[in-house]
Amino acid sequence: MNNIFGRLNPVFEWITKLAGTNLLWILFNLPVVYLTLSLFVAKDVSQMVMLIITIAVLAPFFFFPATTAMFGVVRKWVMKDEVPIIRSFWKYYKENYKRSLAGGVIISVLWVIVGVDYYYFQTRIHLVSYLFLFLMVWLFVITLYFFANTVHTETKLVQGLKNVFILSIANPIFSFGVAIISMVILYISIIKITFLLPFFTGAVIAFLASFAYNKVFTNIIQFQKKDSEK
Image 1 (tube, rainbow, N blue to C red):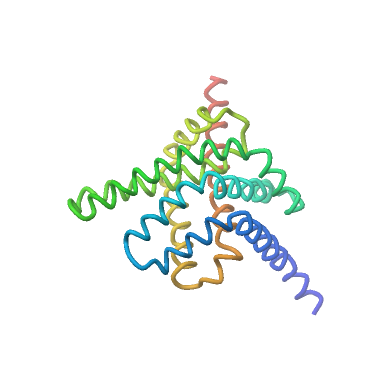
Image 2: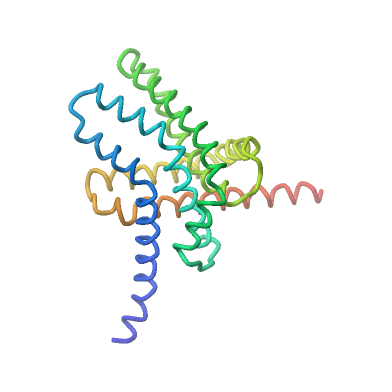
C-alpha cells in the first residue's frame, strides 16, 4: 500500500501545482474571465463585438501580466526547480507588469487586426481567409513565446519582440506543433471537459509553451556557440 501511495505522490504533487497556479491565474484575470464567459451568452453579434473590444482593451492590464506571472512559475518547473507558488507568482507579476502591459498592447492590436481581417475575408473571399487563419496560429505561437521570453530574459521590449519573432520561425514545425496541441487543449476544455478551465488548462499550456521555448532557445544558443568556435 505504501508503495502505491509512493508512486502516486508525484502525480498528486503535479495536480496540486497545476491547479494552484491555474487558480491564481484565474483570480488575477477575473475581469477578462467574466467578459469571456459573457461571450457565450451574448444575444447578438453587436454585443459580442463590444465584449471582444472590451476584452482587447483590458487584456494588457490583466491577462498579460497574470499570464506572464504564470509562465514565470511554470518556467521553474521546466528548469526542474521547486518554488513557492503564491510568493513566486506575485514576484513575477510585480517585476514584469510594465513590460507585460506594453507588450500586451502591441500583441492585442495585432490580434485585433488579424481577427478583423479573418472575419472580413471569411465572409467575402473564403480562400483568402485561410491566410489569416495561418497568421492567427503564428500569432498564437508568438504570444506564447512572448510570455516565456519575458520571464527568461531581461532584454528590452523591442529586442524581446524581435527575439520572439525569430524563435517562432527558428523551428516552425516544433513551434506550430505545440501551438496546435495547445489549441486542441483549449478546444477540449471549452467544448468537452469544461472543469479543466479553472484548474488545469492555462497552466498545462504554459508548461508546454515554456518547454518548447526553452528547447528552441537552447538550440539557438548552442548553434551560436558552435558557430563562434569555428
